[in-house]
Structure formats: structure tokens, C-alpha cells
Length: 252
Image (cartoon, rainbow, N blue to C red; front, side, top):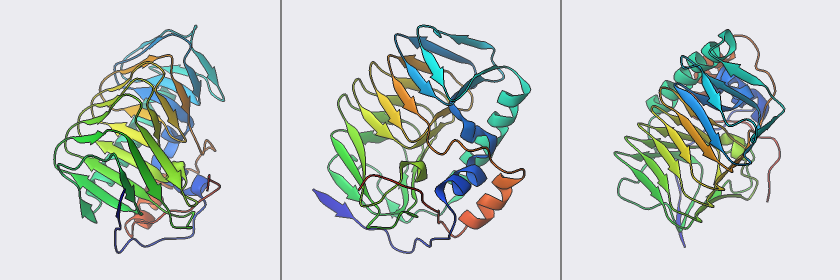
């Protein structure tokens, strides 16, 4: 197992709920947000709002279920959330990378807090460990020029006080989570997000700016669902210019 340490990541004292709210704005309240359609097959469970804008279609609920949220199909809430998601996407893309991982499979790595850059696609085969080294304020950002693809049965684990609310995947095109994969963090994809059968997304959300979110018997548990304060996203990005976050609780 390889450990890659990233140097020069400053931390500011925000709670994870405050930081997530400041960064994602109203998109924070969504477990799933799409640009064109949300399509579900099977007994998917989503914690958080489910929405689409400018598209109108949300299908497959039921049998899918939503808790701690409601549906927003082409309404003002979804429109605002998409605008905030786009701002967050651009903010993530503008962060200076601390480590370049182009061509490296994430499987088998243990990463410390930082901004990790892939010029094209990022692949996960096996297990990726995100090690906060005892700091619940740790921030992990992954920037992809094109796709994010996780293999079947792959997983992301947060360890040593890492908080999945503070994990961000900025995807230049589309994200695909393989069958039975166990993912963590917030996926912001410029195009689409596909979660294959029984894939899970814990402590984060699936936010597709322009394309569809396609679900199949998945579990999505959006962390840090508190409603953000007005104007938080701009203030949040100013704070994050030094690349830091706050923390809440998380598994050791």
C-alpha cells in the first residue's frame, strides 16, 4: 500500500457543516441533482433532495425512496442549486494542485489531505484510503480533465478522523461508479453521473451539471445537510483560497 503525502494544505476553523454550506450553497441540500433527467431503477434510497434543472423528468420514485428531502423538478429551488453547483465546480477546478496523479490508478493508495490532479481520466480499482492524520478539518479535492470511473467492488475509505463531507470529485465530463462499489464524497460532474447496481455514495452527493443522473438500486446518503446561510458560497470560496476546511465527526 502506497502513501502519498501532499504538502502545503492550510486549514481554517470552520465546522464541516459550515464549510460544506459555504462551498456548495443550496446544492448542499441535494443528494441527487441533474441537468437533464434523473432516472432510477430498483430500490434506491436517497437522503437529501432530488432535483433536475433545466430538464424536467424524475422517474423511478417509487420504487426509489427519498428521506430528509423532497423532489424539485425544474423549479426555482433546483435552478438555484444548479447555479451554486456550477460555482462550486468552477471553484474546485481553480484550486492549485498539490499532487499530479495523471495515469495513476487510485486503487491501493493512501492519500493525505490535498488537491490531486488528473489531466484526463481517473480510475479506481480496489481501495483508496483518505487519511486525515487525525485532523477532522482535512480537505481532499480530486480534479479530473475527463472521466471518473470506479471498478466493480472498489471502495473509498476515510480514516484517521477524515470526514467524507470534505471529499470533492470535480469531474470534467462523466462519472461512473461500478457495481457494488462503495464511494464517498461529493461528485460534481460537468456531464452525467451513472451509479451502477448497488453502488453507494456516502457522506456526499451526485451533482451533474448538464447531463443525467442514472441510478440502479443505490444508496446515497448526503452528509452535512444543514441549510446554508445566504451568500455563503462566495465567502466559502474566499476561505478555501487557502485550501482548508472544517470537520464534524467521522469514522476513525
